Image (cartoon, rainbow, N blue to C red):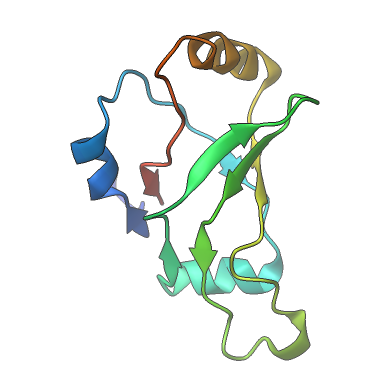
Length: 111
C-alpha cells in the first residue's frame, strides 16, 4: 500500500480458500453515514461476494458496514447490496473469466 492509504478491511480467508488469478480495483457507491463508518474502520468483507447483474452492473452482497452511531434516521441497512463502479471494458473482461467453470468474484481489500 502506498503512503497515505489506510487499510480498512482485509479478507485473509479468501487467500486461503481461493486461488487468486486476477485482481481488479473498483469504487463503491456509498451514502454519507456509510463513508463515516468506513473511515472509523467499522466494515467487514468476510462473507461478501460479488455478482454481475444482467444489465452489466456489478454489485457486492453481504458486505457489512456498521451503522454510524450519530447517523440516526440517515443510517442505511448494514447488509444492503452496494453498486461497484467499474468501467465497461473491465466488466466485459470479468464476465469472460467468470463464464469459465470454477471462477468466482470475491472482495480482497477495502482501503
